[in-house]
Picture 1 (cartoon, rainbow, N blue to C red):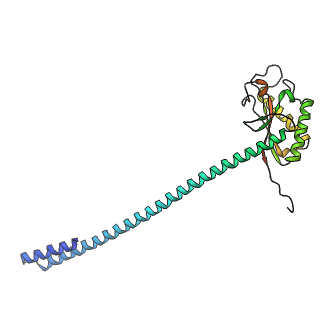
Picture 2 (picture 1 turned 90 degrees about the horizontal axis):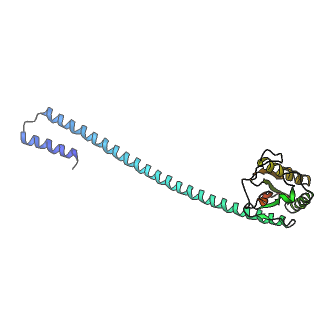
Picture 3 (picture 1 turned 60 degrees about the horizontal axis):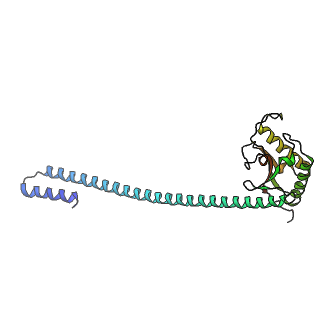
Length: 234
């Protein structure tokens, strides 16, 4: 039963039982009832507004949760696609480097995919000047790259063993690894590979290949990409 109905009943009972309610009191009761009825209507409107706002916020929250889940799914899909593309690119580059290695019979580092130029082939102990045999090997490699992979990007990475520098005059293994990589890179440029295709890195003894020191003294050529160049009119 609504409050207004209750108040009217009370007022009617008062009038019926006393029989002596003044007109002023009756008017006061009626005015009070009208005021309370207005307050009730205001409260009901406020209640409806709050319910509508809550429904709207719940709908917005559901949309936001759905959008969040879609964003997560999209991000996961992108990450999977990136990993697959990276794996495919690494496999492709590894296959290309294995093809380049066929002209030299040099080993491939299966961890990095790099062609391993062993120091005993390329340099005299503690030195960074190319031996004649090393130059001949690099000439073969440069010709293969320019013929079959003319747009490849190649990282030239120098490595050493963990023996400290004692007599060779280098500041440390970092300097030796960088200088040997630089010498190899420079010779490849002299053979016709462009500067823009290559960059060098020196890792000293931080990335050993095996427990055998002589195998850790090396320069690796790592194919990182083969750019697709549009042919005019093609």
